[in-house]
Image (cartoon, rainbow, N blue to C red):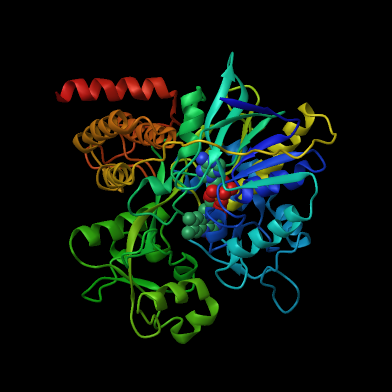
Length: 521
Ligand SMILES: Cc1cc2nc3c(=O)[nH]c(=O)nc-3n(C[C@H](O)[C@H](O)[C@H](O)COP(=O)(O)OP(=O)(O)OC[C@H]3O[C@@H](n4cnc5c(N)ncnc54)[C@H](O)[C@@H]3O)c2cc1C
């Protein structure tokens, strides 16, 4: 394989975590591996709700930490919740300085939305539902103006190179559909900020590139993975036949929108005292049950917002218009869709993975903040906090200095994943590793993933997806309880005592998969 050595820090991904880390590393030279043009392909740009931060004088980081711990169903690391929530306000101020036009009150304060399981209105927002797009636009503008940051658009990572459990390089290739032969890039440190894995599911709110590839890549290189089975399903993805499914932000329910079924019944009141504002996992299961019964769940914004939805929630209104729905006069059909991966590459409080020389931030990581169920709008906050922590950690090991720009000419053919195989994998995940799981379904999922991997293992991207899918399904099979977003119909209760986070290396998950396959033959 062709090798390029550089004094630049290699950042994999170009979402919020990657951009913020690159800015915090300046003037240290960085190269960012971005599959798409900056701003495209990242979940960050699609975030609608905003960033959670205790900005109100009557609120406090302690309240925010407590809500985070409560939402996580017994598996949040309280020290991490404390760390992240304590600093939240500073990040909002920093994003403001960097140019984010947060919605402001007449007296100059921040407009705060209320979201499920938050005890206060504490989600800062931009132009209603434009938080992700606007924050990303502000940071991209800064990144483009920062000479120490080189962005390689149209490139993606496929493999980590390790020597004695130390990461020494990253194999990258042309990210176009044709791919290219990989090139080994050896930099001064590696930061993974490649996002989560929602797109491994057929029904998802995540952009198409977000398919667990970076988590799988790290697992294949030997990194420890934590909480893989904890996948959050968003209750109100629009059920309009689009892939990915557009999101009807939770802030709509915060405004008072209600969930009804085809008979006009509000079904959440019978399931939780907070009804539509119950924790996300509870609402997702309520919606899923209605879908399974053929009751066509819908989000009704008519009474509470009427025509105002078009101005206050432009992204939702646009998705409705695209699909011939007028939310001012008709309810929006919804379904529970894979949205956020609480699990990922296990990191310590310095953002370090178990492999030397490897840092991770954002949704690819599992820091212990989210437990079994992420509190809404803590995702962007975690990406910001750990991007800064990783940048500081890397800065301690990498001297300042200049580095020449990297020039890569990709050549030859690579092996892109077969579309049919990806479709089969995603359908398997939604139907067998989805909102409600059980042992026979999870075993069948592992069998199918193994068969797909055997048939299509010549594509490294697909191997990375299969690794993450295996980790999720094996983790779900091993966790014989229901906890947070992980619901087992054959183990409906949580185990007694404090919840346990899960930790696994890929070979252990593969051994379980092999055993399942053997038992099924
Ligand atoms: C529709 C939607 C709405 C959301 N709303 C909110 C919200 O309101 N508040 C909140 O806190 N959170 C929200 N989230 C979650 C939040 O957006 C994410 O958790 C967060 O943006 C993750 O940031 P990130 O930088 O880790 O990953 P991302 O922003 O997903 O970026 C990942 C980057 O990695 C790149 N990448 C992927 N694979 C590779 C590869 N193999 N090689 C190189 N690069 C790769 C991608 O192209 C992308 O650039 C939402 C998510 C979605 C999908």
